[in-house]
Length: 170
Image (cartoon, rainbow, N blue to C red; front, side):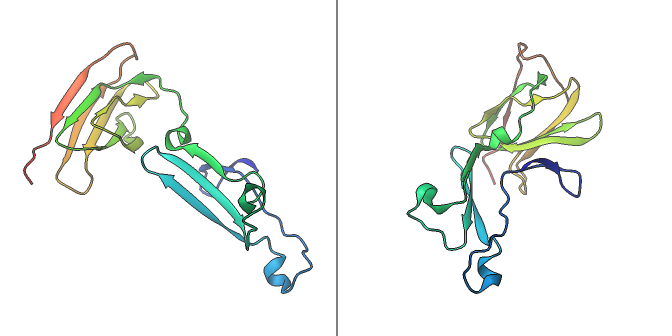
């Protein structure tokens, strides 16, 4: 277990490895391979994620419901992105659309910093370096998308509000 890089150079954390053991049960091709399955549960309201790791034929009445030791693993979606903000963009207040998707793009290299569906209609994007950003928000795949370019970052104590209203007509 630990922190590694996959074959594409992406960072990943391995929480568990199940090694084969000799069980003495037949057929050995089935029982001696550390077989099992995983379940990922998403709570869309709280953004909590639970990852379960079950052996084949779990004993459901054992401690920890029969999952492998150390499981389940729980975390929040926003914990999965643990970078500390250096500056912020203005607070965006959106009318006429519930829970829009925001995408923040670093204009110095045209890279997507992150994309996030917010809860509600107000969001103050955090950024990880001073600079100019493009902010896209709305409902992807529809005509309800808005793009603001050349949005300058600012220190956390500075505040600016940008309001936008999507038309209620289809």
